[in-house]
Image (cartoon, rainbow, N blue to C red; front, side, top):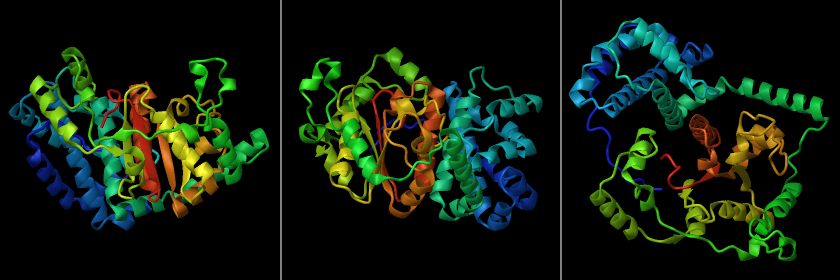
Length: 414
């Protein structure tokens, strides 16, 4: 998906802070890195102290400073006014406890770091007063997302971080299996033939009961009735074609990049209409499109598309196993799964339980087509941010997996 928007920032104002912190880190490299990665297993420092960890640390601190700048400007400060916080930020980042908190985001199981602790440290150090609406919570959410990207973009960093987690992953998998056995007396298998039958049974027929309660007499097969949608590679204009008050609210919530004038919207609509129209199945078959977001209005067939993709495999199996996660049911699941694999292993809202350890092996060995339906249906904003981070982490761990996410247009945060 191509995203067209208006740039929020016109330049990085905290370059001197970054340079100063970089010099301090060089002078006290050992202690600095150990503070930053204190919450991670000790072996990580030994494996990455040469180039990998210093590089990751610098990227993380720069990302943090960029987010602070964005938030200051979002609060109405001009570029030069934001720059006046340079001295306070330098003192803030020199604080050992701040480095420990920022570094903890590199732990694999951490979805969010402690925003309130950072805010308290800023106040305790008696630093320059921040604007009244300054949002620490938003900064740490976006910072954690940046750290996920730093992990994703460095094979070397990911390797040393993941190596320290292998034993914990194995222990957790064993514990989960043992707990499930003690509760239910059954350990799920990776029975793909039974999974095919479950897909056919659950998604094989159009759900017409919403329009006709006597739908049993119709039994229309989705496999035979489905017509692929036509798509363009861009954010639809309707994402921005909103009343001004709604634009301002969505902009403040970070759901759109900036308010659009009529002229902006006209130019964007023209560019959008110039994009080639293609069959969505053609787009999804393209091996270059490993990660795809499908946006559409309510009733445009987003969920039906993912169900059809799962049914394609049920009718004509390949090694690319489809895993469909209906996100509206993932969060409220009574079994409270803490990962997508645990959701398939023990969730109460899955159509068929699949063994977590075997599924992990399959994903790493053969990959899968992982379908996340209804990102916008995760209504709670904080929970939605967590789910987004979980999806990104999933793609980092399972490099052979292809991922499709669906969302309504306005509820989607690029």
